[in-house]
Image 1: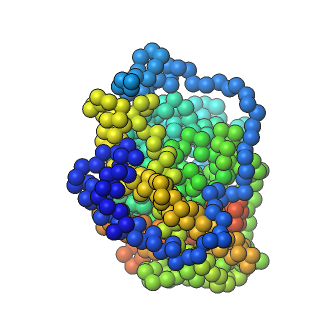
Image 2: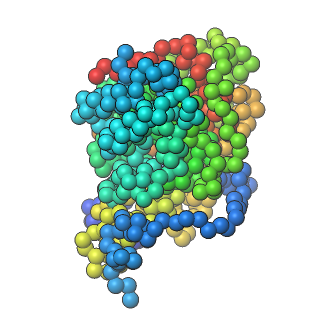
Length: 94
Length: 485
C-alpha cells in the first residue's frame, strides 16, 4: 500500500476537498494503483541529474513596472457568487 | 462543394475575389452545426448572433485592402480560452456561469486578424483527459464512429473541424490534447514549442506544459493560423521574445536533404498493427519524396507517462487552488464557515478526474513526498528532454505514431484512469521536452477510424514539421477524406 484511507482523508483536507466514505475508498484504490505505477521512475538513477522545471532556456523575465489600465471594479465583481458594490462577500472569518 | 467545406486559404481567395460573402459562409456553417450537433456535440456554447454581425461588418468593409490575415474566416475556440462577454466553462460545472471580462491574447489576436468566432468547443474538464468524456456537459462523439471518443482534451475542436462545423479551430495541448484528438478525428493539429504562443487568458492546467495551437483541415491552414496566434506577449512571462517566421515560407516542395528519425521506442508491444502499418507507409512516402529515414533511439520514452502524471497533477493542484467560490465560479449553498465554503464548493464543482488529479498532485507535493515524486519526475524530465536533443543531432525531425491505437470506444476506459493515462504514451515526451509536434492524417484502420502521423521538430522549428507535413499531404489524400454523416 502506497497510501492509506487516513492519508487520503488528510490529502483531501489539504486540497480543500470533501470526499464521501465511498469516494474515499475508491480514491484510495485508484491512487494506490497509480502511485504503484510511478515506482517505475525508481528504475533510473538520477542522483546527478539536474531537474527540469521549465523546458525552454528562459530566465527571469523582467519588464518595466508601468501602471496599466486595470479592470473596472464593477466588472471585477460581476462574476462573484456574492458581492456588494465594492467588495466580495465571504462567510465570517474571525 | 458546400461553403462549410472550405479551408481558410480557399475561403480567403473567394472572399477577396468577391465570389462569396462571410455572411453566406457563416450562415452555412450554422446550418451545418444545427444539423450535426445533435449527433456530434462538438460545441459547448454558440455565438451565432455576434458571429453573423461580425461577418456582415467584414463584408461591408471588403477584403481588398485589409491586412487582417483571416478577415471573414469563421473559427471555433476551445472553451479553455477566455472570451470577453462569452461564457467560458473549461468543461467544468465550477465555471458553468463564468463570463470573462477580458479576452485571452489568442482570442484577441484572432479577432484582430478578422476571425469570426462561431462558438466555444467541448473539452475534458480543465483539459484533463484523453477522450472528452470528462466534460461536465457530456462527451463529444467521434464523427467517424459516433460510439467512439473524439480524443481529448481538445475533442470538440477536432470534431468541429472534421465535421465541417468550423473552418478551423484553436485547441490547447498539455500532454497531447491537440495532437491526439486531431489524429482521432482525421484532421491536422499542431502543438507549438512551449513559449511560442501566449497563454494569457488560457485557464491554467499545468503551467510548465500548457501550449495553445491550431487544428485545421490542412497543413497550410495550420501554418496560417499559427502565424495569427504566435509571438511574444508581455502578459505571459513564459512567452519567448524571439521573432516568429512566416510559416507559409516553410511550405516548400521536396524533402531532399531532410533526415527523418524513426524512434525505435515508439514501435512497441501494444501498438495497433493498423497504426504501425500506416505510420511505416507514411515514412515510405517521405522517403520517396527525397527524405532519408534513419532509426534513432529515445531511451527514456517509457518513463514519460510516470513523469508526466506526477508533474502535471502537481501543477494542477496548485493552479486549481484558485477555485474557492469567492471571486468567480460556483459557491456551495452550504457555507457556514469559510473552510466549509471552500470544501463544499470545490467538491460540488469539480468532476471525478479533476478531483483525482488534485489529490495526486497535492499528495506528490506534500511534506515528505516532494523528493520522491515531484523532484524525481523533474529529473526524469531532463533525461527525456536530453533524449530529444541527442536525437536531433542525427536528424531534423522525428516521425512516429500519435497514439498506440485509433480512437477507443466511449466508456471503454472511464473506470480505469491508469489505462487512460497510458494511452498518452507517445504524446507526453514531446510535451515534457517542450518541442513542437504536428499531427497529420496518414491512414485508416480496418474499421475506418483515422490514424495520425506525428512529426516532432526541435524547439522553435515548427517550420520543419510543417514542411514535412505539407509534402506528405500534397502526395496523399487522407486529409481530404470526410466522415460519412
